[in-house]
Image 1 (cartoon, rainbow, N blue to C red):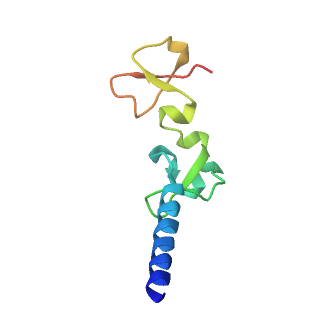
Image 2: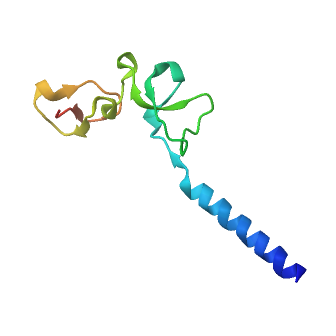
Length: 99
């Protein structure tokens, strides 16, 4: 009887741990910034950044927007100059903001 209880407790612990690990979501690296660079933080507790001292920004302050996704854009081979934004992550392409 004790063996069954021990096996049940061990199995429950493994299942709970697996559920916790799978429930955590990584924040996109370009949105992991120090808290003072965030206009608004992600409210979910299930989103985390890997680097200590950073937080996941839902909206990055305008002066710290450097990546194409910060502008709501996509890296493309070309687009009209009026749609282009300067971004650090579109190597060989341009950042095109359609909205």
